[in-house]
Amino acid sequence: MMAVSAMDIIENLNKEDQDKVSYFVRLLLNQSKYQAFKKEIGLRREEIQQGKTLTHEEIWDQMNV
Image (cartoon, rainbow, N blue to C red; front, side, top):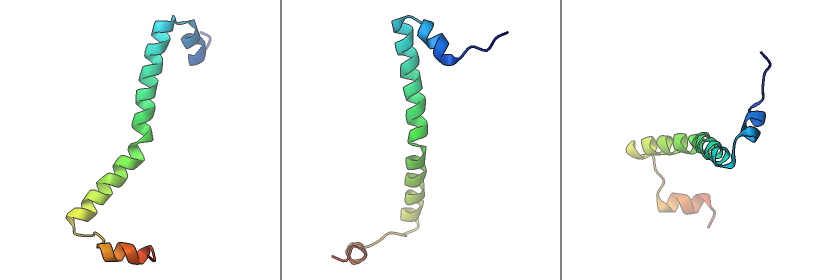
């Protein structure tokens, strides 16, 4: 059996089916794209629950304002 690339298959689909494939690919890409942000938010939530937050003064001091 000869290997066929995904692009060859997609090109042979009708426009409606190509749009469906495109939609699901975008969903998958968005999920992986935001995984780093989700992880960061989870870490920040843990810090907040543990009281590891900066005061306004500490923020301004770090910004040298």
